[in-house]
Length: 540
Image (cartoon, rainbow, N blue to C red; front, side):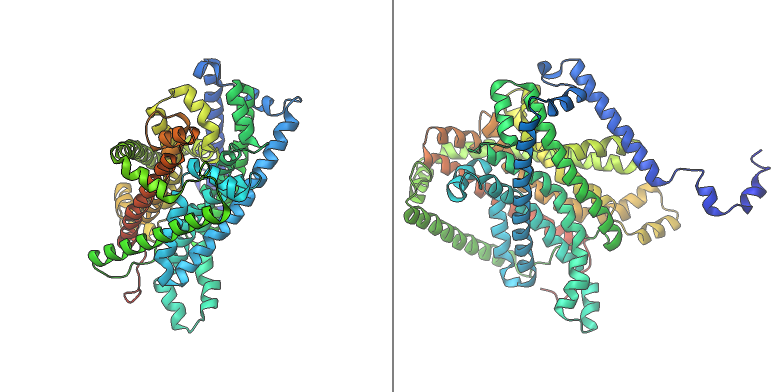
């Protein structure tokens, strides 16, 4: 029968034949819909077996909790306050990050200084800056300020690598035609940066909600953070799931909008990213210059700290004197060294676990359509749900201890690793893929010689963001549920109003984060130099 229809098939238009099989887009939607159904079924099963001592309720009960007539008004008002503050923080932090990255890109002598300021902003632990932000910004503006701080670093990195993606042959072409800098920025630099910028927003938008919720824990009167605290303190499972579901819904919406924009921009402008090349200099000279910059920046910050306390008459019960903190660090070096080792060990485990899971899931979603249908909706939900909204569930499932802190921190690490690895695996140029296939290359060869080299710059950027966040995520987890580490020490000392030891731990957290940022930033630069786009030899 099939052979008899062959002449007829040859007479039919090509598009008519295409109708017989579903398009790739339709297949992708169907597979993702199946993945959502499977996730909902797993959720319902977990509720029916009484997972986490009955803490988990089913999807229908969770949705019903959101729209309960007795609490829906309160929940919606809290959600509107949280999402409004998160949007404001995202806008403020995003604009400041974009402006900083643009200054660093255009004014190269300031690049290293701006990079260090961005690293410092990312290194400030939420548990330490919460009370200080409330003093500076006020209780009403505290959640907005912490949200802006939470989104600053991922957007700064995304804008930085996006602006640098136009370096190389394309920029030389524009320069050879006599194009002015504004013209080059309008038609080359900014358009080529947009995919990377929006990719950063996929991570920053949920981070803004998480930062807002954390800020609300420090004295706000309304918001989803207050509902989460109330639910945890009262053991109200319904209230906890209602607030968590609303937070997840806001994150999903923002992630979906950013994801759709990223897909459109990537098709229009490509997915390549890059980093500006470092000046050619010996490692001794680079190390000396870095040490000088760190010392100068430290002295400036300490001077600002002391001046603020003196001029504003800040009580030592709120913020201690710099000399008091230094004195405590010198007086208890072994105690602090032990705390540093505990936090570093937890953060390293979280980074390894989160990186392995994130890369594996991204690769699985790349090679298997069925796996993609399950993994992508699950990761989107995980990415869009603020970590603090999942804290009560993880604590119930895993208990209160160091292992749970590792899991909590690794969850935060998974997100940028998965997002950037998945983007990198799709970044190979179609012409390169077609050429490799035309030579008869196997799938393994195409993966090794075309796909992975194109993906490495993306993966290294994801690891750079994840590594810088691992310390902060570990400290937050320690402060909420841990038994050892800098986060535990800070929280314990702060509650006793021992501000010098508390800020001693905070200073060490910042130092650790800056060190991690420097190390992984150097690794990221090396990866971009080796596998990124070609750079003009005379660029400095």
